[in-house]
Image (tube, rainbow, N blue to C red; front, side, top):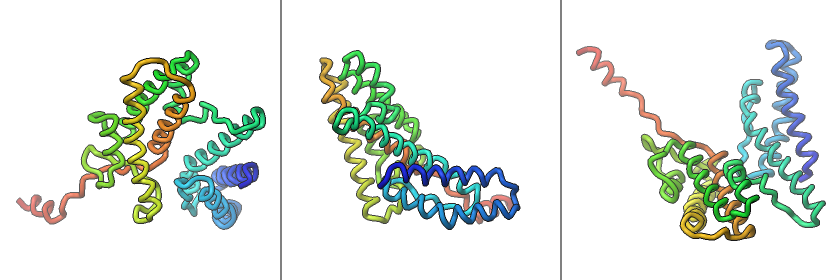
Length: 250
């Protein structure tokens, strides 16, 4: 995949979406622009998304408002390409692939960086894991559980219950690849809190940057899922119509 060409095609698509928004509602110019978006740009962009990341959902749109509603997906794709550009620039400078801490999810990087700079590598991991736990609790509305149990229940394949939202891998849940990602993310996230957060919290010493970066990258992956995957919430079923009718007749 050509990074520069990919970036150009996505930004060109999004510029056209914004341009169509400013056009008169029923104008022939707007209709022609929307047709171009649907027939030419959208298939290309969705093809890019499919190659760029396994959980970048395709944009399903036929109207201007539907295209505009895809802003978060477009922003995410552009952010991936910008981080890719940063990696390429650092590789040219150093001569080998480099992973910058700025590429970690903000939930992890912003907390860890000041401690990392002070040489407190273990505490950087510990505080990042604590911050991740709080982020996850907020995302799914579960401040009653934490750490391993929080991960297990968030990724559970059980339907959501009242007060118990779930995190779902984007895509058709009947698809084997989607099911595999869901199951793997659950195991990975539980294991991350057992194998990384617990030692960082209970052991002593400053540790070392090599170990800490591996741990922070694992925590960042968990944060990534909770930032971009779907929240499946419980909604009370509508009241039975016959029961309502019977109640009004009493």
